[in-house]
Image (cartoon, rainbow, N blue to C red; front, side, top):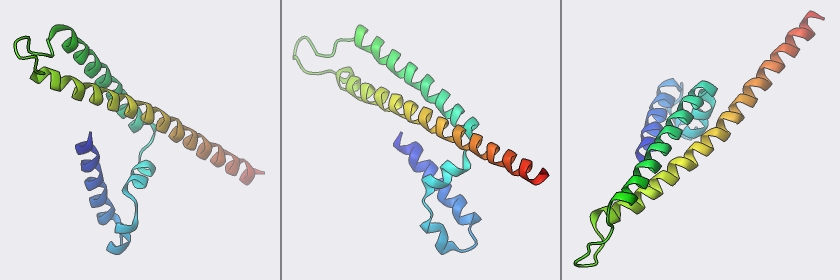
Length: 130
C-alpha cells in the first residue's frame, strides 16, 4: 500500500514539474490535491472496484489460512511462520477495506462536483439565451 502511494506521489511530482512553467512553483503544489483534481469518477470507480476485489480476496485468503493451519508448533509451543503471517494479513485486509471506504466517499464527492459543474454550465447557457 505504501509503495503504491509513494509511486503515485513520484509520478505526480514528475508530471507537475513537467507541466509547470516555473520549477519553483511545482514544489509548492501538493501532489495529492493535483491527483484529486485530475481524476474523474470513472478513475475512482476503477480504483474502488480494484480495492473491493482485493479486499475480498485478502480476507477470504486469510480466513482459509486461519482454518487450515496451526499457528503454534505443537512440540515447542512457538508461533510458526503462518502464525506471524496471519496478523500481517489481517492488518492488510483491514487497510484495504478502509481504503475502499475512503474511495467510495471520494467517488461521491467527485460525482457531486461534476454534477455541480454541469448544473452551473446549464444555468450559464440558459442565462445567455435569455
